[in-house]
Image (cartoon, helix red, strand yellow):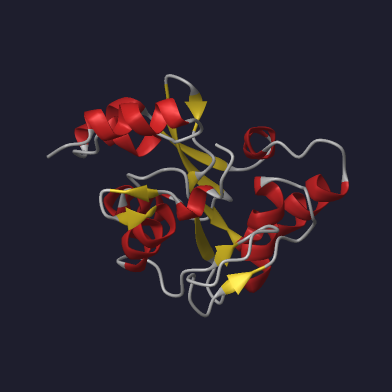
Amino acid sequence: MGVDKAAITFEGATLLERALARLGSVCDPVLVAAGDAPLVDAGPHVIRDAAVGAGPLGGLVAALRASPHRLVAAVAVDLPWIDPHLIRLLADRIGDADVAVCETRSGAEPLHAVYSTSLLGAAEAALAGRDRSLRRLIDRSRAVRVSETEWRHAGIADRFTWNINTPEDLAEISRRAPR
């Protein structure tokens, strides 16, 4: 995108503001793993990634370490339609598993998922290694996989998977946005 995605405005709010509001309805506190980005508007719970340049795994490890709770909802800021109902569904389904994740046509959605702190050791090992893929971490974990049939039956729309990686994505999502 050429800009910090958190600062992109969509429907009158930045993607960061949207994420904070949506997650704030089901999570307390909302931790923001900022990577290297300065997030002055993120509130009091900004945390630094556990390792610089480690991608989403670095943020997840930092959140699992910092969380005062057993469960952590992990979402990407470039998802303008973070779904609080889906976060609740995943938290309700996780039980004693390490992660609850939705399955879509593209596979598991690791950045709209609920993780347990029980995964911290495996996540730290992955962070120390060469394979930092969240999907592979999930594959090696005790995972509850919520099928597309199940989440659709619960009334969840697929727009939670829509992400903004390019100006064209932003234009398309703006065009498709429910009114």
